[in-house]
Image 1: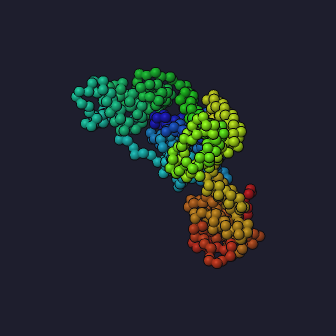
Image 2: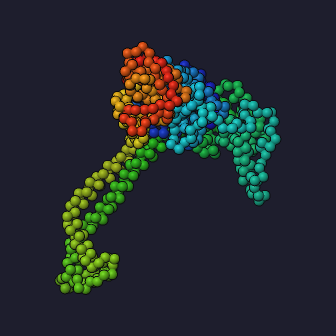
Image 3: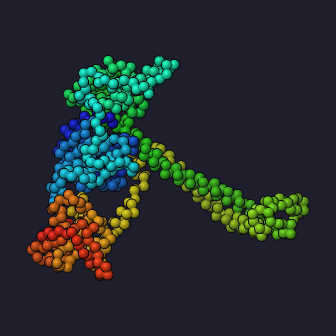
Length: 563
Protein backbone atom coordinates (compact mmCIF):
# COMPACT_ATOMS: atom_id res chain seq x y z
CA UNK A 1 0.00 0.00 0.00
CA UNK A 2 1.60 3.26 -1.16
CA UNK A 3 2.13 6.46 0.82
CA UNK A 4 -0.52 8.48 -1.06
CA UNK A 5 -3.13 5.87 -0.15
CA UNK A 6 -2.10 5.88 3.53
CA UNK A 7 -2.13 9.70 3.55
CA UNK A 8 -5.74 9.78 2.36
CA UNK A 9 -6.71 6.69 4.37
CA UNK A 10 -5.81 8.52 7.59
CA UNK A 11 -8.33 11.25 6.79
CA UNK A 12 -11.00 8.76 5.68
CA UNK A 13 -10.64 6.57 8.78
CA UNK A 14 -10.66 9.61 11.06
CA UNK A 15 -14.02 10.58 9.58
CA UNK A 16 -15.45 7.06 9.80
CA UNK A 17 -14.07 5.78 13.10
CA UNK A 18 -13.94 8.80 15.42
CA UNK A 19 -16.30 7.92 18.26
CA UNK A 20 -16.13 4.18 17.59
CA UNK A 21 -14.53 1.86 20.15
CA UNK A 22 -12.01 -0.98 20.03
CA UNK A 23 -13.62 -3.97 21.73
CA UNK A 24 -10.56 -6.25 21.57
CA UNK A 25 -7.28 -6.99 19.80
CA UNK A 26 -6.65 -10.58 18.76
CA UNK A 27 -3.52 -12.02 17.15
CA UNK A 28 -3.41 -15.04 14.82
CA UNK A 29 -0.77 -16.42 12.43
CA UNK A 30 0.82 -13.42 10.66
CA UNK A 31 -2.25 -11.29 11.34
CA UNK A 32 -4.05 -9.06 13.84
CA UNK A 33 -7.74 -8.21 14.14
CA UNK A 34 -9.11 -5.08 15.79
CA UNK A 35 -12.70 -5.75 16.89
CA UNK A 36 -14.67 -2.50 16.51
CA UNK A 37 -17.95 -1.27 17.98
CA UNK A 38 -20.13 1.44 16.42
CA UNK A 39 -18.03 1.45 13.24
CA UNK A 40 -18.95 1.05 9.53
CA UNK A 41 -17.05 -2.26 9.56
CA UNK A 42 -16.79 -4.59 12.59
CA UNK A 43 -13.25 -5.86 11.91
CA UNK A 44 -9.98 -4.22 10.89
CA UNK A 45 -7.35 -6.78 9.91
CA UNK A 46 -3.63 -6.09 9.70
CA UNK A 47 -1.78 -8.83 7.80
CA UNK A 48 2.01 -9.02 7.91
CA UNK A 49 2.69 -12.24 6.01
CA UNK A 50 4.52 -10.33 3.27
CA UNK A 51 7.36 -7.84 3.43
CA UNK A 52 4.90 -4.94 3.59
CA UNK A 53 1.92 -5.26 6.00
CA UNK A 54 -1.59 -4.70 4.68
CA UNK A 55 -4.65 -2.99 6.23
CA UNK A 56 -7.95 -4.75 5.46
CA UNK A 57 -11.29 -3.48 6.85
CA UNK A 58 -13.84 -6.29 6.70
CA UNK A 59 -17.25 -7.52 7.81
CA UNK A 60 -15.99 -11.02 8.64
CA UNK A 61 -13.33 -12.61 10.81
CA UNK A 62 -10.31 -14.27 9.28
CA UNK A 63 -9.49 -16.70 12.10
CA UNK A 64 -11.64 -18.95 14.30
CA UNK A 65 -12.43 -17.35 17.67
CA UNK A 66 -10.83 -20.22 19.57
CA UNK A 67 -7.49 -19.84 17.74
CA UNK A 68 -6.86 -16.15 18.34
CA UNK A 69 -4.68 -14.85 21.19
CA UNK A 70 -5.89 -11.80 23.10
CA UNK A 71 -3.33 -8.99 23.03
CA UNK A 72 -3.12 -5.39 24.24
CA UNK A 73 -6.03 -5.74 26.65
CA UNK A 74 -5.39 -2.16 27.81
CA UNK A 75 -7.22 -0.91 24.68
CA UNK A 76 -10.35 -2.99 25.30
CA UNK A 77 -13.37 -0.69 25.35
CA UNK A 78 -11.35 2.44 24.56
CA UNK A 79 -13.05 5.04 22.38
CA UNK A 80 -11.24 6.27 19.26
CA UNK A 81 -10.68 10.04 19.48
CA UNK A 82 -8.97 10.43 16.14
CA UNK A 83 -6.77 8.88 13.45
CA UNK A 84 -4.07 10.53 11.40
CA UNK A 85 -1.21 9.57 9.12
CA UNK A 86 2.33 10.82 9.70
CA UNK A 87 2.89 12.88 6.58
CA UNK A 88 3.58 10.53 3.72
CA UNK A 89 4.87 7.76 5.99
CA UNK A 90 2.96 4.51 5.68
CA UNK A 91 1.85 4.82 9.30
CA UNK A 92 -1.54 5.41 10.93
CA UNK A 93 -1.73 6.67 14.52
CA UNK A 94 -4.95 6.01 16.45
CA UNK A 95 -5.58 8.14 19.56
CA UNK A 96 -7.59 6.30 22.22
CA UNK A 97 -9.48 8.13 24.95
CA UNK A 98 -8.85 7.42 28.65
CA UNK A 99 -10.93 4.64 30.17
CA UNK A 100 -13.69 5.18 32.68
CA UNK A 101 -12.26 2.73 35.26
CA UNK A 102 -9.66 3.73 37.83
CA UNK A 103 -6.15 2.96 36.68
CA UNK A 104 -7.11 3.64 33.05
CA UNK A 105 -7.06 7.44 33.13
CA UNK A 106 -4.12 7.60 30.71
CA UNK A 107 -4.87 8.08 27.00
CA UNK A 108 -3.18 5.64 24.60
CA UNK A 109 -1.72 5.80 21.10
CA UNK A 110 -1.97 2.84 18.75
CA UNK A 111 0.51 2.86 15.86
CA UNK A 112 -0.41 0.85 12.74
CA UNK A 113 2.84 0.55 10.78
CA UNK A 114 2.58 -0.59 7.17
CA UNK A 115 6.25 -0.04 6.35
CA UNK A 116 8.54 -3.01 5.68
CA UNK A 117 10.42 -4.67 8.57
CA UNK A 118 8.56 -2.79 11.34
CA UNK A 119 6.18 -4.11 13.99
CA UNK A 120 2.70 -3.96 12.45
CA UNK A 121 1.01 -2.77 15.65
CA UNK A 122 2.47 -0.97 18.67
CA UNK A 123 0.80 0.54 21.75
CA UNK A 124 2.11 3.62 23.60
CA UNK A 125 1.13 5.75 26.57
CA UNK A 126 -0.32 9.02 25.41
CA UNK A 127 1.66 11.34 27.68
CA UNK A 128 5.08 9.69 27.92
CA UNK A 129 4.95 7.80 24.60
CA UNK A 130 6.43 4.81 26.41
CA UNK A 131 5.84 1.61 24.46
CA UNK A 132 3.57 -0.86 26.27
CA UNK A 133 3.31 -3.67 23.71
CA UNK A 134 3.91 -4.51 20.06
CA UNK A 135 2.86 -7.20 17.59
CA UNK A 136 4.51 -8.17 14.33
CA UNK A 137 6.93 -10.48 12.61
CA UNK A 138 9.59 -11.93 14.92
CA UNK A 139 12.52 -10.13 13.31
CA UNK A 140 10.72 -6.85 12.69
CA UNK A 141 11.86 -3.61 14.30
CA UNK A 142 10.09 -1.83 17.17
CA UNK A 143 9.51 1.88 16.45
CA UNK A 144 11.03 4.23 19.00
CA UNK A 145 7.77 6.14 19.41
CA UNK A 146 4.24 6.47 18.02
CA UNK A 147 5.23 9.34 15.73
CA UNK A 148 8.62 8.04 14.65
CA UNK A 149 9.28 8.85 10.99
CA UNK A 150 12.08 8.67 8.49
CA UNK A 151 14.01 11.87 7.69
CA UNK A 152 11.79 14.02 5.46
CA UNK A 153 12.51 14.13 1.76
CA UNK A 154 13.65 17.33 0.08
CA UNK A 155 10.24 18.04 -1.45
CA UNK A 156 6.61 17.17 -0.80
CA UNK A 157 4.11 16.36 -3.54
CA UNK A 158 1.79 18.89 -1.86
CA UNK A 159 4.23 21.81 -2.14
CA UNK A 160 6.06 21.50 -5.44
CA UNK A 161 7.46 24.61 -7.12
CA UNK A 162 6.24 25.52 -10.57
CA UNK A 163 9.57 24.51 -12.13
CA UNK A 164 11.67 21.40 -11.32
CA UNK A 165 14.52 22.18 -8.91
CA UNK A 166 17.95 22.22 -10.50
CA UNK A 167 19.65 18.86 -10.53
CA UNK A 168 16.60 16.88 -9.38
CA UNK A 169 16.14 14.97 -12.63
CA UNK A 170 19.70 15.12 -13.93
CA UNK A 171 21.40 11.81 -14.70
CA UNK A 172 24.21 10.75 -12.39
CA UNK A 173 27.42 10.15 -14.39
CA UNK A 174 27.71 6.74 -12.78
CA UNK A 175 24.38 5.78 -14.38
CA UNK A 176 25.37 6.68 -17.94
CA UNK A 177 25.72 3.96 -20.56
CA UNK A 178 28.36 3.39 -23.17
CA UNK A 179 27.87 5.14 -26.50
CA UNK A 180 27.43 1.75 -28.15
CA UNK A 181 24.30 0.92 -26.09
CA UNK A 182 21.10 0.66 -28.20
CA UNK A 183 18.47 3.40 -28.04
CA UNK A 184 15.85 1.30 -26.24
CA UNK A 185 18.38 0.47 -23.51
CA UNK A 186 19.26 4.14 -23.15
CA UNK A 187 15.58 5.10 -22.83
CA UNK A 188 14.96 2.35 -20.27
CA UNK A 189 18.01 3.34 -18.21
CA UNK A 190 17.12 7.04 -18.34
CA UNK A 191 13.52 6.34 -17.21
CA UNK A 192 14.72 4.13 -14.37
CA UNK A 193 17.24 6.69 -13.16
CA UNK A 194 14.59 9.42 -13.27
CA UNK A 195 12.12 7.23 -11.36
CA UNK A 196 14.69 6.49 -8.65
CA UNK A 197 15.44 10.21 -8.30
CA UNK A 198 11.71 11.07 -7.98
CA UNK A 199 11.07 8.39 -5.34
CA UNK A 200 14.10 9.50 -3.29
CA UNK A 201 13.45 13.25 -3.45
CA UNK A 202 9.66 13.76 -3.40
CA UNK A 203 7.53 12.70 -0.46
CA UNK A 204 4.39 10.91 -1.59
CA UNK A 205 5.83 9.48 -4.81
CA UNK A 206 6.22 5.73 -4.49
CA UNK A 207 8.49 3.66 -6.81
CA UNK A 208 5.55 2.29 -8.82
CA UNK A 209 4.09 5.73 -9.58
CA UNK A 210 7.55 7.18 -10.23
CA UNK A 211 8.28 4.39 -12.71
CA UNK A 212 4.99 4.86 -14.57
CA UNK A 213 5.32 8.65 -14.81
CA UNK A 214 8.94 8.46 -15.98
CA UNK A 215 8.16 5.84 -18.62
CA UNK A 216 5.08 7.65 -19.96
CA UNK A 217 6.99 10.93 -20.35
CA UNK A 218 10.34 9.44 -21.44
CA UNK A 219 11.71 11.11 -18.28
CA UNK A 220 11.42 14.50 -19.99
CA UNK A 221 11.30 17.14 -17.19
CA UNK A 222 9.22 19.48 -19.37
CA UNK A 223 6.49 16.82 -19.63
CA UNK A 224 6.98 15.12 -16.25
CA UNK A 225 7.00 18.08 -13.87
CA UNK A 226 3.55 19.51 -14.81
CA UNK A 227 2.04 16.08 -14.15
CA UNK A 228 3.54 16.05 -10.66
CA UNK A 229 2.27 19.57 -9.92
CA UNK A 230 -1.19 18.59 -11.13
CA UNK A 231 -1.18 15.47 -8.94
CA UNK A 232 -0.13 17.55 -5.91
CA UNK A 233 -3.01 19.98 -6.49
CA UNK A 234 -5.54 17.14 -6.57
CA UNK A 235 -4.19 15.76 -3.32
CA UNK A 236 -4.18 19.16 -1.62
CA UNK A 237 -7.86 19.59 -2.54
CA UNK A 238 -8.69 16.49 -0.44
CA UNK A 239 -11.54 15.46 -2.73
CA UNK A 240 -10.76 11.76 -2.74
CA UNK A 241 -11.58 9.83 -5.89
CA UNK A 242 -10.53 6.24 -5.22
CA UNK A 243 -9.26 4.27 -8.19
CA UNK A 244 -7.56 0.94 -8.85
CA UNK A 245 -4.90 1.09 -11.55
CA UNK A 246 -3.14 -1.78 -13.28
CA UNK A 247 0.51 -1.32 -14.21
CA UNK A 248 1.62 -4.73 -15.53
CA UNK A 249 5.11 -3.49 -16.33
CA UNK A 250 5.65 -2.78 -12.60
CA UNK A 251 5.17 -6.42 -11.63
CA UNK A 252 3.14 -7.53 -8.60
CA UNK A 253 3.38 -4.10 -6.96
CA UNK A 254 1.62 -2.55 -9.94
CA UNK A 255 -1.27 -5.01 -10.03
CA UNK A 256 -4.37 -3.37 -8.56
CA UNK A 257 -2.41 -0.33 -7.33
CA UNK A 258 -4.76 1.81 -5.24
CA UNK A 259 -4.66 5.63 -5.33
CA UNK A 260 -6.98 8.22 -3.72
CA UNK A 261 -7.08 10.56 -6.75
CA UNK A 262 -7.06 10.32 -10.52
CA UNK A 263 -3.51 9.93 -11.80
CA UNK A 264 -2.32 11.87 -14.87
CA UNK A 265 -1.40 8.64 -16.67
CA UNK A 266 -2.88 6.39 -19.33
CA UNK A 267 -3.50 2.96 -17.80
CA UNK A 268 -6.35 0.49 -17.20
CA UNK A 269 -8.32 1.89 -14.26
CA UNK A 270 -11.44 1.09 -12.24
CA UNK A 271 -13.20 3.87 -10.38
CA UNK A 272 -14.51 2.93 -6.92
CA UNK A 273 -17.50 4.25 -5.03
CA UNK A 274 -15.52 4.94 -1.85
CA UNK A 275 -12.44 3.84 0.08
CA UNK A 276 -14.15 0.81 1.61
CA UNK A 277 -15.10 -0.56 -1.80
CA UNK A 278 -11.58 0.12 -3.08
CA UNK A 279 -9.95 -1.67 -0.14
CA UNK A 280 -12.43 -4.53 -0.39
CA UNK A 281 -11.75 -5.08 -4.11
CA UNK A 282 -7.98 -4.89 -3.59
CA UNK A 283 -8.21 -7.33 -0.66
CA UNK A 284 -10.29 -9.77 -2.70
CA UNK A 285 -7.97 -9.64 -5.70
CA UNK A 286 -4.52 -9.26 -4.17
CA UNK A 287 -4.22 -9.37 -0.39
CA UNK A 288 -6.45 -12.27 0.65
CA UNK A 289 -5.36 -14.68 -2.12
CA UNK A 290 -1.77 -13.95 -1.11
CA UNK A 291 -2.54 -14.52 2.59
CA UNK A 292 -4.46 -17.75 1.94
CA UNK A 293 -1.62 -19.01 -0.28
CA UNK A 294 0.84 -18.18 2.52
CA UNK A 295 -1.23 -20.11 5.06
CA UNK A 296 -1.58 -23.03 2.65
CA UNK A 297 2.19 -23.18 2.20
CA UNK A 298 2.67 -23.00 5.95
CA UNK A 299 0.22 -25.82 6.67
CA UNK A 300 1.40 -27.91 3.72
CA UNK A 301 5.02 -27.50 4.87
CA UNK A 302 4.23 -29.30 8.14
CA UNK A 303 2.28 -32.01 6.35
CA UNK A 304 5.09 -32.28 3.78
CA UNK A 305 7.66 -32.81 6.53
CA UNK A 306 5.52 -35.61 7.93
CA UNK A 307 5.20 -37.15 4.46
CA UNK A 308 8.98 -37.05 3.86
CA UNK A 309 9.63 -38.61 7.27
CA UNK A 310 7.16 -41.42 6.56
CA UNK A 311 8.57 -42.05 3.09
CA UNK A 312 12.09 -42.21 4.52
CA UNK A 313 10.87 -44.64 7.20
CA UNK A 314 9.16 -46.75 4.54
CA UNK A 315 12.41 -47.02 2.55
CA UNK A 316 14.31 -48.04 5.69
CA UNK A 317 11.69 -50.66 6.51
CA UNK A 318 11.91 -51.95 2.94
CA UNK A 319 15.63 -52.44 3.41
CA UNK A 320 15.10 -54.07 6.83
CA UNK A 321 12.51 -56.40 5.28
CA UNK A 322 14.91 -57.34 2.50
CA UNK A 323 17.53 -58.13 5.13
CA UNK A 324 15.00 -60.09 7.19
CA UNK A 325 14.01 -62.20 4.18
CA UNK A 326 17.69 -63.18 3.78
CA UNK A 327 17.83 -64.59 7.33
CA UNK A 328 18.21 -68.20 6.02
CA UNK A 329 21.03 -67.09 3.72
CA UNK A 330 22.79 -65.27 6.57
CA UNK A 331 22.55 -68.33 8.84
CA UNK A 332 23.95 -70.46 6.02
CA UNK A 333 26.89 -68.01 5.68
CA UNK A 334 27.48 -68.21 9.42
CA UNK A 335 27.49 -72.02 9.40
CA UNK A 336 29.92 -72.07 6.48
CA UNK A 337 32.26 -69.66 8.27
CA UNK A 338 32.18 -71.75 11.46
CA UNK A 339 32.90 -74.91 9.49
CA UNK A 340 35.84 -73.36 7.60
CA UNK A 341 37.07 -71.18 10.40
CA UNK A 342 40.62 -72.41 9.89
CA UNK A 343 40.65 -70.62 6.51
CA UNK A 344 39.68 -67.24 7.95
CA UNK A 345 42.06 -64.51 8.97
CA UNK A 346 41.73 -60.83 9.85
CA UNK A 347 41.68 -58.24 7.05
CA UNK A 348 39.80 -60.30 4.44
CA UNK A 349 37.15 -58.48 2.40
CA UNK A 350 35.53 -61.73 1.26
CA UNK A 351 36.11 -65.46 1.14
CA UNK A 352 35.06 -68.17 -1.34
CA UNK A 353 33.98 -71.44 0.32
CA UNK A 354 32.64 -74.72 -1.03
CA UNK A 355 28.95 -75.18 -0.21
CA UNK A 356 27.87 -78.07 1.98
CA UNK A 357 26.29 -79.69 -1.10
CA UNK A 358 29.68 -79.72 -2.80
CA UNK A 359 28.31 -78.63 -6.17
CA UNK A 360 28.99 -74.83 -5.99
CA UNK A 361 31.20 -72.19 -4.48
CA UNK A 362 29.80 -69.48 -2.17
CA UNK A 363 31.31 -65.99 -1.95
CA UNK A 364 30.81 -64.48 1.53
CA UNK A 365 31.50 -60.73 2.08
CA UNK A 366 33.56 -59.91 5.18
CA UNK A 367 34.39 -56.70 7.06
CA UNK A 368 38.19 -56.30 7.07
CA UNK A 369 37.94 -54.03 10.12
CA UNK A 370 36.33 -56.79 12.19
CA UNK A 371 37.97 -59.76 13.79
CA UNK A 372 37.24 -63.31 12.62
CA UNK A 373 34.91 -63.98 15.54
CA UNK A 374 33.02 -60.73 15.02
CA UNK A 375 32.50 -61.46 11.31
CA UNK A 376 31.04 -64.88 12.15
CA UNK A 377 28.88 -63.44 14.93
CA UNK A 378 27.58 -60.71 12.61
CA UNK A 379 25.91 -63.20 10.26
CA UNK A 380 24.29 -65.17 13.09
CA UNK A 381 23.03 -61.86 14.58
CA UNK A 382 21.51 -60.79 11.25
CA UNK A 383 19.90 -64.20 10.84
CA UNK A 384 18.41 -64.12 14.33
CA UNK A 385 17.16 -60.55 13.88
CA UNK A 386 15.56 -61.40 10.53
CA UNK A 387 13.86 -64.53 11.85
CA UNK A 388 12.35 -62.65 14.78
CA UNK A 389 11.62 -59.35 13.02
CA UNK A 390 10.16 -60.46 9.70
CA UNK A 391 6.56 -60.35 10.89
CA UNK A 392 7.10 -57.22 13.00
CA UNK A 393 8.68 -55.35 10.08
CA UNK A 394 5.88 -56.38 7.70
CA UNK A 395 3.22 -55.13 10.14
CA UNK A 396 5.10 -51.87 10.73
CA UNK A 397 5.52 -51.32 6.99
CA UNK A 398 1.77 -51.77 6.42
CA UNK A 399 1.07 -49.29 9.20
CA UNK A 400 3.48 -46.74 7.69
CA UNK A 401 1.88 -47.17 4.27
CA UNK A 402 -1.51 -46.41 5.81
CA UNK A 403 -0.05 -43.27 7.43
CA UNK A 404 1.41 -42.20 4.08
CA UNK A 405 -2.02 -42.61 2.46
CA UNK A 406 -3.57 -40.47 5.21
CA UNK A 407 -0.88 -37.81 4.73
CA UNK A 408 -1.57 -37.71 0.99
CA UNK A 409 -5.26 -37.20 1.72
CA UNK A 410 -4.34 -34.41 4.15
CA UNK A 411 -2.23 -32.66 1.51
CA UNK A 412 -5.06 -33.00 -1.01
CA UNK A 413 -7.51 -31.57 1.53
CA UNK A 414 -5.16 -28.65 2.26
CA UNK A 415 -4.90 -27.89 -1.45
CA UNK A 416 -8.71 -27.76 -1.64
CA UNK A 417 -9.20 -25.36 1.31
CA UNK A 418 -10.04 -21.81 0.25
CA UNK A 419 -10.59 -19.78 3.44
CA UNK A 420 -8.13 -18.48 6.00
CA UNK A 421 -10.23 -19.79 8.91
CA UNK A 422 -10.04 -23.38 7.63
CA UNK A 423 -6.27 -23.18 7.19
CA UNK A 424 -5.59 -21.44 10.51
CA UNK A 425 -7.52 -24.21 12.25
CA UNK A 426 -4.87 -26.65 10.99
CA UNK A 427 -1.90 -24.64 12.30
CA UNK A 428 -0.72 -25.84 15.73
CA UNK A 429 -1.34 -23.16 18.39
CA UNK A 430 1.65 -21.20 19.58
CA UNK A 431 3.29 -22.31 22.79
CA UNK A 432 4.25 -19.64 25.33
CA UNK A 433 7.93 -19.11 25.95
CA UNK A 434 9.64 -20.97 28.78
CA UNK A 435 9.96 -17.76 30.73
CA UNK A 436 6.24 -17.05 30.34
CA UNK A 437 5.37 -20.59 31.40
CA UNK A 438 7.64 -20.27 34.43
CA UNK A 439 6.15 -16.94 35.46
CA UNK A 440 2.60 -18.19 34.88
CA UNK A 441 3.25 -21.22 37.06
CA UNK A 442 4.77 -19.10 39.81
CA UNK A 443 1.98 -16.53 39.62
CA UNK A 444 -0.65 -19.19 40.38
CA UNK A 445 0.89 -19.62 43.83
CA UNK A 446 -0.03 -16.09 44.91
CA UNK A 447 -3.27 -14.23 45.50
CA UNK A 448 -3.60 -11.75 42.64
CA UNK A 449 -5.73 -8.77 41.55
CA UNK A 450 -5.88 -7.39 38.01
CA UNK A 451 -6.16 -3.62 38.32
CA UNK A 452 -6.35 -3.07 34.54
CA UNK A 453 -4.95 -4.51 31.36
CA UNK A 454 -1.41 -3.43 32.32
CA UNK A 455 -1.10 -3.68 36.11
CA UNK A 456 -1.53 -6.77 38.30
CA UNK A 457 -1.04 -7.01 42.06
CA UNK A 458 0.38 -10.20 43.64
CA UNK A 459 0.05 -10.93 47.36
CA UNK A 460 1.93 -13.54 49.40
CA UNK A 461 -0.09 -15.79 51.72
CA UNK A 462 2.70 -16.87 54.11
CA UNK A 463 6.30 -16.11 55.04
CA UNK A 464 7.51 -18.68 52.51
CA UNK A 465 5.32 -17.20 49.77
CA UNK A 466 6.39 -13.66 50.70
CA UNK A 467 10.00 -14.74 50.31
CA UNK A 468 9.45 -16.28 46.86
CA UNK A 469 7.25 -13.39 45.71
CA UNK A 470 9.75 -10.69 46.65
CA UNK A 471 13.12 -12.30 46.04
CA UNK A 472 12.38 -14.66 43.11
CA UNK A 473 9.19 -13.71 41.27
CA UNK A 474 9.37 -9.89 41.30
CA UNK A 475 11.44 -8.08 38.68
CA UNK A 476 13.82 -5.25 39.55
CA UNK A 477 11.46 -2.57 38.18
CA UNK A 478 8.30 -3.89 39.89
CA UNK A 479 6.94 -1.93 42.85
CA UNK A 480 7.07 -3.61 46.27
CA UNK A 481 4.60 -2.70 49.07
CA UNK A 482 4.34 -3.50 52.77
CA UNK A 483 2.33 -2.04 55.63
CA UNK A 484 4.75 0.08 57.67
CA UNK A 485 5.47 -0.90 61.26
CA UNK A 486 3.13 -3.88 61.38
CA UNK A 487 3.20 -7.52 60.21
CA UNK A 488 1.61 -8.14 56.83
CA UNK A 489 1.87 -9.69 53.41
CA UNK A 490 4.41 -8.67 50.79
CA UNK A 491 2.70 -7.10 47.79
CA UNK A 492 4.19 -6.70 44.30
CA UNK A 493 2.76 -4.49 41.54
CA UNK A 494 3.64 -5.99 38.14
CA UNK A 495 3.68 -3.71 35.11
CA UNK A 496 4.67 -0.63 37.11
CA UNK A 497 6.87 2.10 35.63
CA UNK A 498 7.73 5.73 36.25
CA UNK A 499 4.51 7.03 34.71
CA UNK A 500 2.17 4.56 36.46
CA UNK A 501 -0.92 6.55 37.55
CA UNK A 502 -0.99 7.49 41.24
CA UNK A 503 -4.41 5.87 41.56
CA UNK A 504 -2.88 2.49 40.64
CA UNK A 505 -0.18 2.92 43.29
CA UNK A 506 -2.85 3.85 45.86
CA UNK A 507 -4.87 0.75 44.96
CA UNK A 508 -1.83 -1.53 45.41
CA UNK A 509 -1.01 0.15 48.73
CA UNK A 510 -4.62 -0.33 49.88
CA UNK A 511 -4.29 -4.05 49.16
CA UNK A 512 -1.06 -4.20 51.19
CA UNK A 513 -2.81 -2.42 54.07
CA UNK A 514 -5.75 -4.81 53.88
CA UNK A 515 -3.50 -7.89 54.15
CA UNK A 516 -1.79 -6.65 57.32
CA UNK A 517 -2.49 -6.60 61.05
CA UNK A 518 -3.71 -3.01 60.62
CA UNK A 519 -6.65 -4.05 58.41
CA UNK A 520 -9.24 -2.57 60.81
CA UNK A 521 -7.58 0.85 60.99
CA UNK A 522 -9.08 3.77 59.12
CA UNK A 523 -5.72 4.83 57.65
CA UNK A 524 -2.55 2.77 57.31
CA UNK A 525 0.95 3.95 56.32
CA UNK A 526 2.37 1.73 53.55
CA UNK A 527 5.97 1.84 52.38
CA UNK A 528 6.71 1.14 48.72
CA UNK A 529 9.81 1.08 46.50
CA UNK A 530 11.15 -0.53 43.36
CA UNK A 531 12.07 -4.15 43.99
CA UNK A 532 15.72 -3.34 43.15
CA UNK A 533 15.87 -1.48 46.48
CA UNK A 534 14.52 -4.41 48.53
CA UNK A 535 16.85 -7.12 49.84
CA UNK A 536 16.83 -10.01 52.27
CA UNK A 537 19.40 -9.77 55.12
CA UNK A 538 21.85 -12.62 55.43
CA UNK A 539 20.84 -15.52 57.70
CA UNK A 540 17.38 -13.99 58.24
CA UNK A 541 14.21 -16.06 58.29
CA UNK A 542 11.88 -16.42 55.32
CA UNK A 543 9.71 -13.40 54.59
CA UNK A 544 12.23 -10.87 55.91
CA UNK A 545 12.99 -7.85 53.72
CA UNK A 546 14.85 -4.56 54.11
CA UNK A 547 13.78 -1.60 51.96
CA UNK A 548 15.91 1.39 51.01
CA UNK A 549 14.82 4.49 49.08
CA UNK A 550 11.21 3.76 49.99
CA UNK A 551 8.29 6.19 50.02
CA UNK A 552 5.35 6.19 52.42
CA UNK A 553 1.73 6.59 51.40
CA UNK A 554 -1.31 6.70 53.71
CA UNK A 555 -4.28 4.69 52.44
CA UNK A 556 -7.49 3.07 53.57
CA UNK A 557 -7.36 -0.76 53.77
CA UNK A 558 -9.63 -1.91 50.95
CA UNK A 559 -9.70 -4.53 48.17
CA UNK A 560 -10.68 -4.13 44.52
CA UNK A 561 -14.11 -5.42 43.63
CA UNK A 562 -12.80 -8.57 41.90
CA UNK A 563 -9.88 -10.86 42.69
